[in-house]
Image (tube, rainbow, N blue to C red; front, side, top):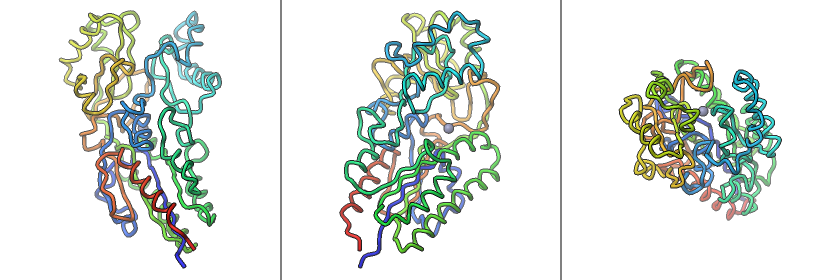
Length: 387
Ligand SMILES: [Zn+2]
């Protein structure tokens, strides 16, 4: 009689290779370890790429906000524009706008505001639904759809239902379900921790010890139940310690670029994006940014190479990327200064994610390769006859 076999995929947000490469991490079980290259952007781009095996230019998801005033879920905020600025631009009002918008569009995806409230009505959000449910990535089949289509008994865990600690304890409990073959867990809390503590290596190691201990206890529980486990632990991107700040908004203002009248601008922590109906204004912005040494202006060719080019310019007609470790500051996030950030160039060593596995079968180069690994493992286990 065969022993029951199970496959466990654990996606730990921001578990960068640089943080992991010189330390142990369930070494006796996760015998294969390597870096895996991410794609330009944030989790809103990287996670759909892992779940679908496709690039942003194929699945359509890159930065969270894209320019489309016709479909914007924030259209209703135009009615707030008669209010004075101090009422619109504060943490409470922005939170309130998010909550109301989520209710209005019945969205359950993740979004937060980093556009001035008076420009929000121009933007749509690429992640409106829970991407960890079937149909969560509109227009593209994800690994979650594949699990459902194959009818392999499985369980999926994400922050929509659980904290990271709850995911581990629920997963361990669910191992007792003898029919279940595949477990997929998304754990987001290391990302938030690294944003705050990337300057404290000891604290980061303690946090990684916590994940290591939990993964080990999942494996011990499975073995105690008499199951063989195939374990895959990976991440979407890394986390770079912050080494400098640059006042990009100040630079643009000093060069007479009026971001209220002449153009619309979105400032993420590592990327600035611009839209304007005037080619002259766009050229002026390009001219100012091309001589700025704090980052690089991304050409269409560079965007194509990274598979994040959109010919309608919905994610930006001009896009500027900060050099690794440098944040755009001040920005619209307020006084908060993170100690770590991702979303820099994928070639930077701190951008690399990690891939660890209990088998040496696969050697992924890019995070998009993780999709096929999961598919192969699902195919393998769904053909296998237990008992
Ligand atoms: Zn993050």
